[in-house]
Image (cartoon, rainbow, N blue to C red; front, side, top):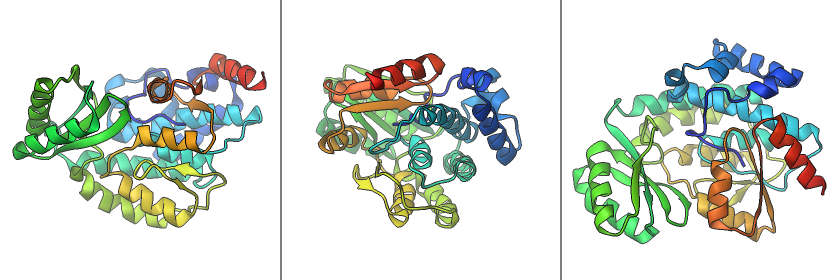
Length: 305
């Protein structure tokens, strides 16, 4: 499983880059596609640029694929793949459906279209802790008199992210606290993704998704928009277009993987956000991660054992 926007950090991928020739080639390939030094941005920042959506997305994808390649060389082959929002594109690379260079170009466009869809400062993204789905939906309905607001990510039991117009999200935060919300945390995400405000971005992205070379996947992708296993290129195209303006059904996706008989999840890329969510969703799962050479060695050792 592959992390999405928010997991980026200055320094990500540096140790793989320093120790692995293939990782250096990967960063060079991304730089060639994008026209700037991806390694320098990932390793040295500035943080403000790295956190801009159009830079975050290809940078995070590159750092995650560098970790993936090292794990693949250790002989790992997955039963299925999944990714959180942006991470779904990394998952497609892992499943053999999308070439790395095409993925880099596609997510740069995705980031640009997302950024352009909502004027800077007009949107807001917020995590609500301690409420169930029905109450969050009710809160969003009540606050929608102030503008667009809806659930964006169903991350785990008691952790749901909402997004939309700033005034409407702020009203939803206020209402949530009156209904027992333990905490309402505004997030450092620059656009209200996975809401209907992204429909213009999805329309622009659709043009590129329909023309990028995509192959049927070697293993199923548990997709964000429907939390179902898909494998045909035609299904993948539809899913990527739908994803941008639809809620991320991450909790459901983890439960689907469990029902497929999967007992071990490996988060590949910066951070351990997805491991943390999976622990809350299904504590019985074995959770591993690969974000640097040390965690790679620990994961390979755990799998061998």
